Image 1 (tube, rainbow, N blue to C red):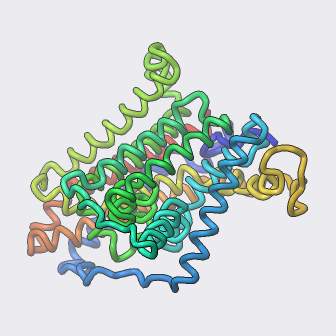
Image 2: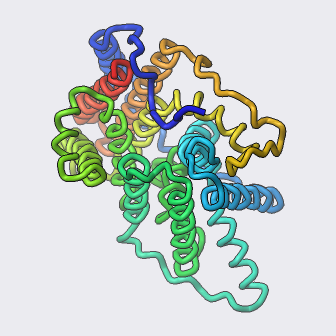
Image 3: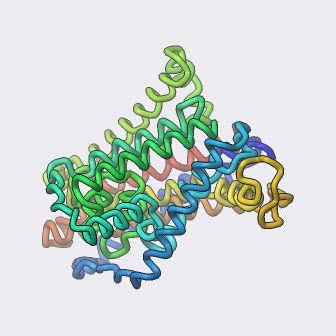
Length: 414
């Protein structure tokens, strides 16, 4: 089974339309959307009461939680006890494709699905239930409000370092050990601050996936301290992954990797996140005092970047999950009779992937414009003032969109 961890478009493919035309068309769509909003959207329409997700029936929630714990245990065991070959061991593909890409896509499409299958949340809730029944439960400490989601942002950056910078990221055993370390950190945090408070703030994946699938709760959840940083880390790390394939980044990469391969990559990742912060700060300069009120506009941008960048990996790499699940240790087993299944690398043509990526990027930024304009109407209470405040935001969206298209096109021509 050949390597599946090269993200984006298959190298060497031709872009169906020139990059300049794609960027110009995308910019035109954004400008047109801005004008339609400025003249046709004159009162806030998205400030309805926060939508609360109905909890699943207890039996179903327990079942999904048990499924999450089981899958986690199988993947971790495969990493520890299976072959050291990344493409023959279930762990790397399960983590980087099934978990990171699959859950992100499922969140965008169906809502906050990870909440129900999170293995550490399931174990934390089960431990809390058992402690209560045994009379051993104690009141959790209040989670520090000022800390907010900064731990989740740090955790997401650490995962990006593991996925994109660490030379041993594909080694099953090393990956399994990191899985267990993260699980242990989650258990300790939940035991101190309580399950819900901890997973809503400090679980990097729980917070990000929740935001991607938040629907009506997105605006309210995005107001928590540290949320802006977490979303920018998601955007910046995705941009870095694409930038590594870009010829224009090659010189910078060579200089950075002069300090050591892993260290140089971490520096490059930090640079991309810092650039995303700078671009965002510049876009919010005219409304700086209201910056946190616009944090939720980053959610569709992050979703657009993730879908555009990882779409081909989801389609191609996702096919590898079935044969690997049949032989998780790479020991020649065939548990469910599907170990011989092959990955169809021609399942999607380059043209189809390119159009999906363009649509994902542009749709995400148009959605961000809509959210920003609606929030500006709330903040300023006047349609003209709201439109004027969003001119710089329009420029920000054009920059983000064109940057994303450039990174994607670099994958074609790498």
